[in-house]
Amino acid sequence: MNQSKRPAHVLLQSVWKCSTARLASLQIASPRPISLNEPTDRVAPYIWASVKACAPGSTLVIVLATLLGAICNIGQSYFLGQITEVGMLDERRQVVLQLFYLISLWLAAPLLHVVQNLAVLYSSQNLRIGVTDHLSARLMYARPQQLANNTVGNLVERIELVSVSLSEIVCTLADTAIKLIAVAILASLVLTSASWPIALLAAAWMMSAFMLSSYLAYSGMSIAEDASDAHAQVMANLNEIVTNIPLIRSFVAHKTERHRFNHSLRADLLACRKVRSYWLFVLLIETSYKWLFGIGIITYASFQYSTGSLTIPQLVTIGSLIIILSWHFESVAFHFVNLFDSLGILRAGMRELSSIPVDLPSGNKLPTLPEPGKIMLRNVSVGHQGITVLKEISLCIEPGSRVGIVGPSGSGKSTLLAVLRGDLQPDQGTVELHGLPLSTCQSSLFATLCSEALQNALMFNRSVLDNINYGQDPCHTQKIMQTASIAQVNRLINNLPHGLDTIIGERGAVLSTGERQRINIARALLKSCPLLIFDEATSSVDAISEARIIDYLIHRRDSTVLVVSHRIASMRNFDQIVLLDQGRIVDIGRFDELLARNELFQALMQHNENVENIYN
Image 1 (tube, one colour):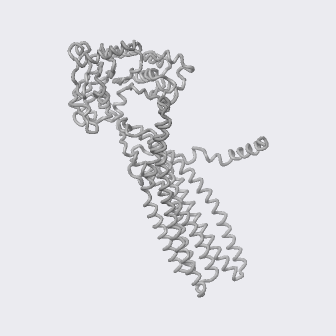
Image 2: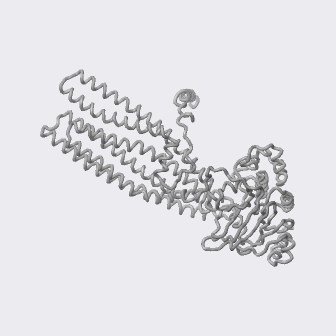
Image 3: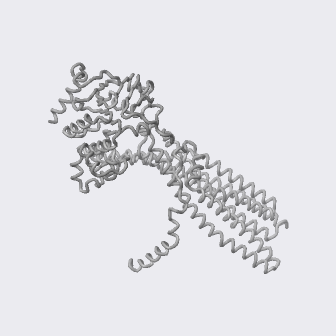
């Protein structure tokens, strides 16, 4: 049976490939990127900017096809009345002519509908792709501290919802609004030729129905926004569950997590049902309103016919137009519900995304700075949620020096690095980079001068080569392997099934934490910047490998090195060590100096030795 169907299936696809499949070419109606500087805090200007960039031609075609389609629909009612009139006069030649016009409009209407659907296809997909590209590109410029309050699932869901809802809004407006206006104007003109009182009554019906639909739909946007928020929370929770499956299995917390997730699912279900129940309420009101005016117009037209004011052809024209108007406004009411539903989702998503500040490139040429240069902090204080994290920090880091930052957990080490990177703005004090206030610098300036290796060792689901050489021009394999050797990851690469071309899985799942950290270090070293920052980058690396990496950093004099680590012994040969406690710098000096004079440093060193003795 499958064999008999296969030839027809193959033939059908062959015909498709030779005909309409060519319309899928990306060379047709290709979208342009939306400017990164286009703000996302206002809905209407953002919709307009998206249409201009991504779908100007296809949106215009939707408008024109809709307008011509409305002319065809109203024209059919008009010529139907004309055929009735000339038929009663037994003018056969005129009947044939009017019938030709009627059939021509009847044939043109579906062709225009096909053109309109094709334009909707191009417009909606271009807008979806363009908006997704724009929002994701802007998000790449967000500071890590600003993203900390948003879950990955929530942001991904918001971008998807905004891109889909915006395309739906544009296509619905281009179709429904134009159709409504065209039908209202054309129907009024046709009805005026039959009976101007009925034309006025129909015009009042159409305009009042439009205003009623708009008001009822607009009043429910807040309900749609709540539903969008609830669904985004479900996606955020789902992403968290998938990410933490190993933890759930380890603690046998399947039932607990399912119960928590069901709570958010039920909230999402309730919010969605509230939206649909409100739209049902709206449709009931609009249906009652349509019945009221429809029955009124039909009753008045029947009365005028009974008094001889209307002829049978005029009555046929009015009756057919009332049916068309009723169908159109029923369709408009339905589309208005979807329109404002999408608008509520769009507003909720853009509200969430625009609340995340981004550091966009200005386009100006970055200043040329000495490499490496001096870093200066003067009386820097930083607070978070009413708690002072850093207190009056003053520090000078000389060019080409090796500086260690140590202290108990929670002493402010990572916060200090965040201030140096420009991710956190100090509440008071200044940070200078090469004599230039960091607050006046673009974030991209610091990124070009700094290379980082962080504890969490972020990885892409790509090859080892792609992760090590990330963000750089293509390098010779020999240089990459030399850098990998310095980072103590060369043996790992040689043991992988495909070497540098081995795919390491999502977030480097096929590697251990220590292996990810060594690849992370190789990536930072390959960037070769004047400032190198290690933030607990070797916390899961074995002591021997760490010692070799630190030894390389000590002898590398072409850059300034900042290292945050709990393994204080690894900083024995650093130029200076900054000791933090409770957000303050309590001492600065070389390893031997601090060990001789500072009790806190001695305690930290003793703790390190005790931990190493336990594991050894």
